[in-house]
Structure formats: C-alpha cells, structure tokens
Image (tube, rainbow, N blue to C red; front, side, top):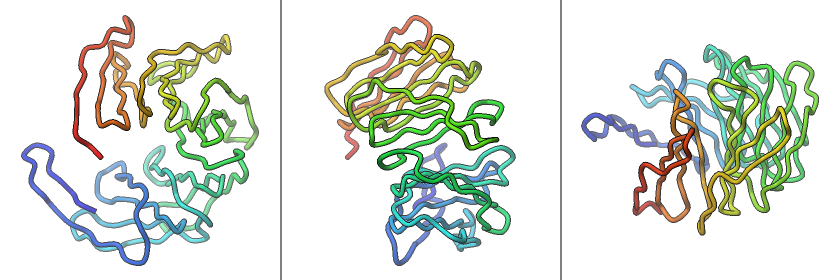
Length: 232
C-alpha cells in the first residue's frame, strides 16, 4: 500500500502486506487508519503513520473482499464479498457485529448507505441492484436494468429517492425510487468502473475501463470534462 501526499505528489509511507493480495482499501473517518480487504476474504487495519497492522477482523469472509468502507462515526467497518455476503465489524476490537448472507446470486461488488443509514444498497455481478432495510435485514426492492456486472451504486447526497449506478454494460443509470423508473444517463463503449456524485450533488464523475474520466453537470447533464488517461 502506498500513501501519497496529494498536495505535492510525495510518497509518505509504504506498507507491505503478506500472505494475500489486496483487493480494496478504505481510509478511516479520521484518516488515521486504512482498512484493507484481501483476496482471501480477510480484513485488516493498518496505521497510516507507522504502517503497522493494528487490527484483524474476526470471522472473515470465505472469498475475495470486493469493497469495504467505514460508516457512521467511523466505529464500524462494512464489507462486501464474492461470497455474496455483507459483514459489519467493530473498528475498535475487530469483532463481527452482523452478517447479511446470500444477498445476491453472484458477487456483491459494491455497497452504499442512505444519508440516514436506514437503508443499504448493494450492486452485484448478477447485474442487479438491491435496497435493504438494515434495521430489519429485509429486502426493500430489487432493481433490474443493467445487462452486466454493476460496479458501483450510490445514493444522491441530498435525496435518498435517487440512485446512480455504473456497469460493465457501458451504462450509467439514474434511478428514481419514488416512481421506480430509471433512465440511461450516459452510454459508453467501455466498461464503467465507477460513477459518483460530488459531495454537493452538482456534478457526476465517472471512470472507465479504458482509463478515461468524465465529469458532467448533474442538472443539465452536459459534459464539462473528459480526461483521457493512461490507467491500466
């Protein structure tokens, strides 16, 4: 894991992780630690300054961790896995707090939470998006429309009635949960690896398998920026 200072491009720290490949990472809310999801299903936490492992989550996934994030006040880590489950852990002692198994027919690739943390949305390799009531662990609704892996999905920062999703089918879709209708926001010739709102909801940013990044005005849906990168 390489930690960079984005203001000057300098390398701040380098952390070596043994015995497994890193599949995803997430900074803690305060930026002091980094949680790592591994190919073997385990989750570990490292201190940013020292590079030392400070915590290993107990009772880990049985397959590759696809995505993980800190939620709420940073006391909980949530992960999505190829074993089709989502797990909640204490970021304090590594104990497993909760398991939501068999959420999809294939890998759970991504997850996000509504602003009030009452609902969780999951994206899957089975091409579906599902919304869950996390207080009761019940399925609220399932959304179908994509034709390939759904790589990311997120709630609108200011309105939980709207979702934004990105897929290997080349489409970015906008979902209106009040009307249960969706529209294709953008269609490309390359896999869409991620689509997110800016924090003020004024822009939509998407990254693509071909290394490019696009930025749109969320209201007018006009493209403001198109960066042709060289990412692999």
